[in-house]
Image 1 (spheres, rainbow, N blue to C red):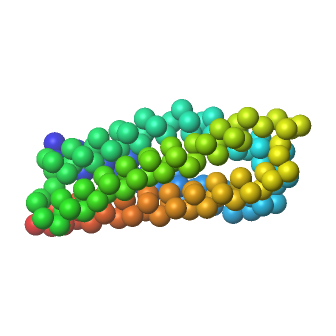
Image 2 (image 1 turned 180 degrees about the vertical axis):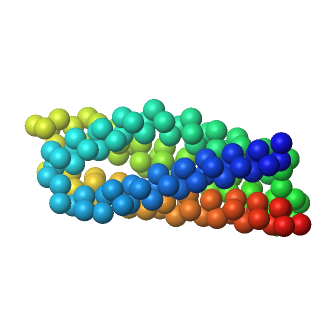
Image 3 (image 1 turned 60 degrees about the vertical axis):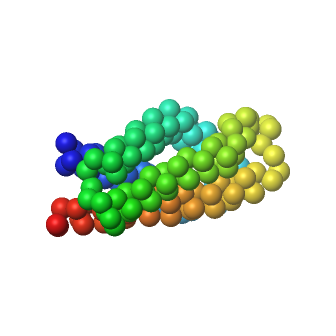
Length: 153
């Protein structure tokens, strides 16, 4: 059971980190898009992630919490796992409070109602995403270290 919790937690945290990294790679030249192109891309991407991310993120949190309680050694491995869980909670809170409102704003746009300051929304979303990237990578690093420390005992 211990190895399952560690592997599943690492796998889902790795998927999240990968999604966050892919967003940065995908959006590297996003400033080249016109308002209409950006709107279409963001609306399509958001429709997908709105369905996927909540369940993946909550499942990751549950697995990490179980890993902290049952799978890793006391001391530094457990502390790192608890920090990883806290990073997930921070990421979820940040996403709900900052990214979701921006996503809803972009979802409400049509080709004729895109606001003149649409690029400001795009840039705010990107800045927020970069913070989420840091949270996701730190979460994965904490879990990875906790697993290595536990398995190397």
